[in-house]
Length: 502
Image (cartoon, rainbow, N blue to C red; front, side, top):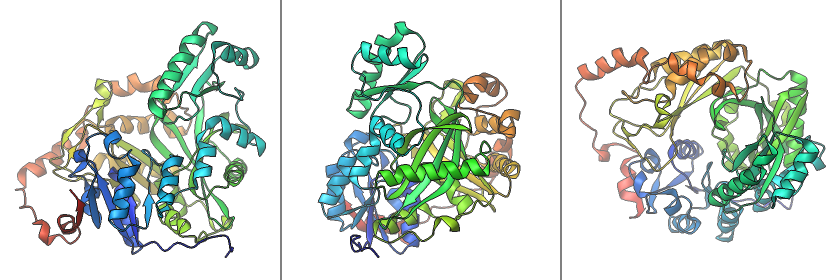
């Protein structure tokens, strides 16, 4: 082992997150023989992650800016419960360099990249420069922040229209504007800067050539502190609505083996140039597999990480924790092979037939699919009330099979089995996507839903009618069992005894 790598003994980890990713991390920690600390907002008091963790800490507030975005509260909870480390999950403070720095300054281990790497890659202008320096192609665009209308017009005159404006500190589809006419430059720039400041507390904006019909392909990388950089192949995330992913798959039908290997090497080169360690995702955009452009790097675990786990057999959360302890990766590049195909479907509590309005309320009856090659990551349970304050994603259905066709069929069967009462969700829309000939053939771009949404909704119902009748009838006929007293439930009984703060 290198003399410069410090080993960290971790026994207890605070998860600075909520929902399904918090549950996912808690399960992994338990399997590693480590203890978990959950934090929860007032609106999340009955959330599954708060019930499952070994220790559960109330940090107050109803909204994220009163709870999961307050680093001082989170670090205090970690110190008060004797945690050794903090895992940020995704979203919230997961890509906040100041938070990572504060965690380390408090004497805790941050389970993620070092703050310097987060800063370097979090600024999209700096990240584009870094990619160019290691000969990874980027789309034509501005090299510096755009501050005035003239700055934007000068770039447009060189690269042509259309262009897309992006927040330099942005992500998740926020702080973006497409400009198709020179007359739109001033208003688009002002609007983009306002939104960037509102969402990211940073109004820096840049622009790049807009690709009309792109594929969104990302590469999972992971690195340790011993100089080992490994890619775990790519994911295709092109089925999305307003930059929000709906279906992800691994590998991508768009690439051949040579293109796949080249893209993986490019992703590792970017991570190495940033002195990166831990799990991260390098995102690319393209219209042709022969011409793929770097877009950004996400310095955290991704929502869609399970599809990579399914085709490689690697537990990415476990590796994140191990790397943070100072251990080398448990595998080398030559050990990683693609095993079959995997698809993830995001189940959102929203009604596609009513402009994707939230579908809130209490889960009274629930049935989740299972079987070989079927995985459901969720924080739902019967009696849980979906809070209005947070993201609409309530579950992920992940399927794995030997071929893409078989995996699609397995997904359709799993979605057919999924039952969440009469609640409208994204399930019926996803079912229709999977029946579409363009999806089946793999011939689609990020414009797929924009182009086909109306016809897809025309032929779908608001709820999963396929199972509604039989499952609903079964629930009605069966008398509800008496709830098990919490004192008789091995894990959940700990919550009342070990709640550290009220």
